[in-house]
Length: 447
Length: 148
Image 1 (cartoon, helix red, strand yellow):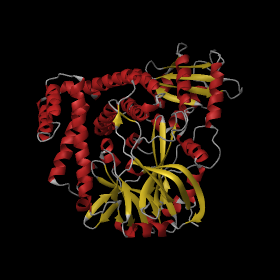
Image 2 (cartoon, chains in turn cyan, brown; image 1 turned 90 degrees about the horizontal axis):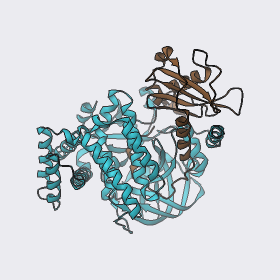
Image 3 (spheres, one colour; image 1 turned 135 degrees about the vertical axis):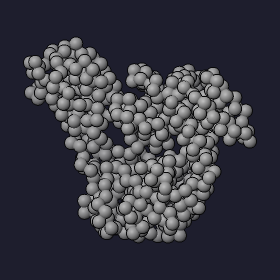
Image 4 (cartoon, chains in turn brown, purple; image 1 turned 90 degrees about the vertical axis):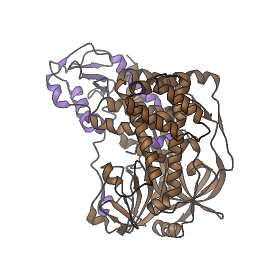
């Protein structure tokens, strides 16, 4: 399937080379650094060579040479992490810079933060915990996937119970929980899932490792107000956490910005998936109403953050409504939308998104045609398409993304009716999930 | 007025949703260390819950009340609570991949399962529902995890 998708377009030679090195490194992580064969050592040599003109060449060279000799110091894995992050960041930037040439789509103008905040050191007490986590990460990088056992993962989950209570470690905790949960799932299921993990192992590992090194006390931002129109909804979920993302356009006298409003909850996997929507709907009714009824939200006080995240401090639902189809047509007509820059730590193609509004007639057999370029459509969220009927549709709003190949993620299908490509199943009733579970668990406590 | 969620008429339809678990009847179910285990509410008394464990490693099963008494329905075969647990596992997408129900016909009763572990895991998971929503925290890392 992947090979087929790769035929839709071609990366430039230089980008293709970086992509291959990243994929080779990913394989190497998966098999483990204690099992390096000559071919793997050649890959590390290639990485060292790639940094020959870089200011960090000495650090990378020393670290990777040690790994080749099976000398496993913490500093060497830190150098490895820096090397991988740099490679992935360069790939991300090069793709972004060349997106118009590559697939014929103009990207939004990027705007920068006004309040910039750097990474800081963690508190002393936290440093000890983080050192343990780093050691665990190093041990799994040395052993690779085949040395990973359910028992070792489950014992590590006790460490995660501790860090869940430390606000500074929220990002790390969410990442590690999701990561160990995926590992456990793969260890207890079939071989097919293993290949999916192989593509993500290095990505998750590197992100977790870097988050054990430094923390950011806040994130870059700029104050903002204006009229917000919500246009789509997405969700991300893992075993203990769920985020709903409303995509929208924030408009004021100065500019129109493509934004995301993130709403998150800690949720255990003991809650049936269908209950999630009810829980969110209960707490964030206004946003669901604004989306479903196309009501304009007045953002009185907001903060625009890295990667166009809109943090809303004060808002009210205005009485005004809008026609979603007509609004999107005008918003995309002269391509005047802007987006916020992404920060260096997040420069990875997983964060890559270009909003796009296309005519339905340009979609054939789940392939989006943009001029000479062909990009596959990937529907998520339990949706399937009946080809003959979708031809009735007029426009599709979605995002162009990159995951080992370009694809388009449709978010809203607009025509005689509007369909959000997300499994909104909330019936609007109040969720009783927590009181019921609490009551049932109290029976157990009476033992 | 724009209509929402008329997916069928648009040609986009939701794949059949797996049956919604009734949390009043099955408050907790998981597959852990090769065991399908969970908590099943009593059908007759609101004060009682059963802790059920089906061990796919040693091919045994057990069911006890919250007062640590063996389930009266265990008479050389699986009781209704264990059957409910199995049926629920079959209808939950994630669990159905891991649990081979057909193999359980040959399983035998065993009274030595560690119920406290099941209790404790239920409690630990419940704890997550008590953590307030992280209102002011942006967690880019969540984007590494796929939508459902």
